[in-house]
Image (cartoon, rainbow, N blue to C red; front, side):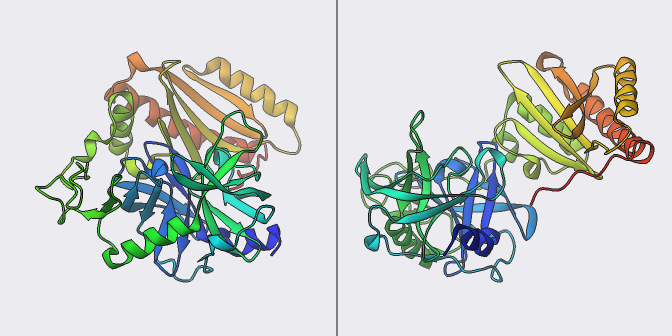
Length: 367
């Protein structure tokens, strides 16, 4: 199966995952009715956002985590039974030099597929076997499927060596299948694999409410009664509180650590906070540059920049963006609400002007 055939056939079964901890990739297995990803992608979150080609961003529950093997399973947020069936392949049949394809979302570039070969079938790291590959994988690929020439999942793309030249590692499908089979009788129940003995533990089977019943290891089990407002803190918590007041679902808005994304009509608003620079930056992506009258448009944008306070027009590629900045020391619920509300209103007004008077084009949606 060629790289083109692989991505065309299976891209609908590969999803984007985002949480307050970061972003990554996952893939749906029909046989188990679960989404598979890495544990480090979901972190300690009980819920993460999941987006696929056939559905918009939804909340999905994390039902299984395995820190030792860096695995996690999610409940599908929508009915995914109609999607192309990804199947688990046989790790034992793999050989050095076999062709493989890694599918994921590196650096937010949706549905990127990279082709390579298996450099070494068995590379042991900390007592665990990994498949070493030369297919380029990057941040955002974590949790995505490694697919062989027969279109079967032979691994989960897990980590890279920083500074290495395409040194990527995938957890073999044998570990994944073992975990899936062990979890199958518990489908839908929140469970954790003990990092010491490998026993799958549920809240009901914990010894004295916190110990593995097999080896006695203390298990940090997620509690249902932990209030959601403790999920983030500081400036991030204030930003999410403001979004909630403005009518947005703050959980769905999360797009990684200290990053959020919301839609205001046909305008996409991206919000980010960098603790090192101390600024909250909000970017409203309005429309694309027109094919004609560029000089008149630039004149208009520069004139508006002269009039605006705390806001600025800029060009990112061929996107026209209206941005505003706020120092984190000045961020409160009141100042944040006023800033975001004004940005949202002005973004809608400016988008209308740009598209009607200057023939700017709508921004193409990423799929």
